[in-house]
Amino acid sequence: MGMLRADIESLEQNGITGIALTRLGDPDVIPLWFGEGDLVTPDFIRDAAKQALDEGYTFYSNPRGRPELREAIKHYLARLYQVDVDVERITVPGSSMLAITMAAQMTLNKGEHGLIVTPHWPNIDRAFQVTGASFSTVRQRWSEGGWQLALDDLRAAVRPNTRALFLNSPCNPTGWVMTREGQRELLDFCRQRGIVIIADEVYHRTVYDAEAAPSFLEVASDDDPVIVVNGFSKAFTMTGWRLGWMVTPRRYATQMAVLAECFNTGAPSFVQRAGVVALEQGDALVARLRAQYRAGRDAVMEILAAHPRIELATPEGAFYAFPRIPGLRSSRAFVEGVLAEENVGLAPGYTFGPGSDEHFRLCFAQSPERLRIALERIVRYIDSHGL
Image 1 (spheres, rainbow, N blue to C red):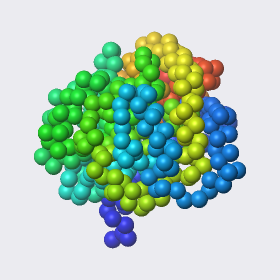
Image 2 (image 1 turned 120 degrees about the horizontal axis):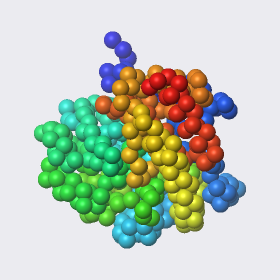
Image 3 (image 1 turned 90 degrees about the horizontal axis):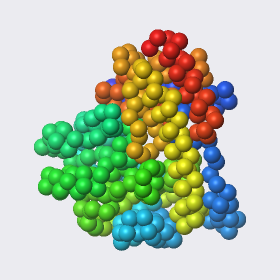
Image 4 (image 1 turned 180 degrees about the vertical axis):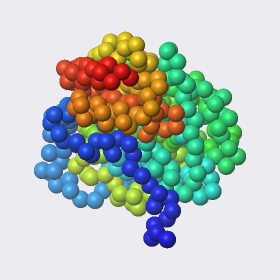
């Protein structure tokens, strides 16, 4: 008998990390496996962190987040979505992934059921698993016009003991974006069934026909069963800073303070100061990144979508492509082969949930030149192996 709980003993490393760790940091590899580009965080954000360090922002602060950062998030959301979010609903515990883990712990008990909209980021499985609850998935449907979530499929997947529903829009890895009408319909259903929606909106600024993707904050009231998770990593090229936030029902302000103390005692103070500057001065950066990601998406569609062996719909949001090679027997063997022979790092489809083993994922946030080289190498591998 192991010393750990059974649901902890059975944890396995996700398929992306398992591939990437074998060549992580190798300068010969073009890394398209993780959700980040090759641009460092801009000077104006880094300078804010340096100044905060010089000014002595090295002490504990409010575990729910420094007051000035929570106020900045409130004003940012108001500017972006025309909503007035009570600052008491906002918590900055650390990374966005930590916020998702907290949301799962808050909502799921052993013996209850969680539902995950898939394809999905694999660590969501682990966050649900460590609660001791069971979980299952409901899959988005693919067509040449794009990925969509059929709400009838979701309703059919709900069980009597379903307590939490996780969805990510814009979606990693498919690029699906949920409509505002879909959010309203889903929220009405979850209200009736007592299901908490855990909405991961970290790619909210990476959409190609609007300033921001629709948010559940636009349709939910202060005390609706919704936890919205967001963060700085993707919108402001701050992946290594581990800074995110969550918006929860107002009545749980005390519980959020206690949980934030238990999990991380708050994000580092100097990092939070940089976050304030990112929110207040980052719109031009967001626009530049959107233009780069659009060019990357165009290159992916030009080179991969035109290939006769690849099925790929244009992503509406985020900065990933999730191509399918019909008949592919093992997405892990495929990405291992591309890495070994072509020095391109990809993520295997199987790790994104059931039904995805004919897919692979790539991040097109890299600089245009490197991305085109990587795409041409992928095509060369497919052609040379007769896939």
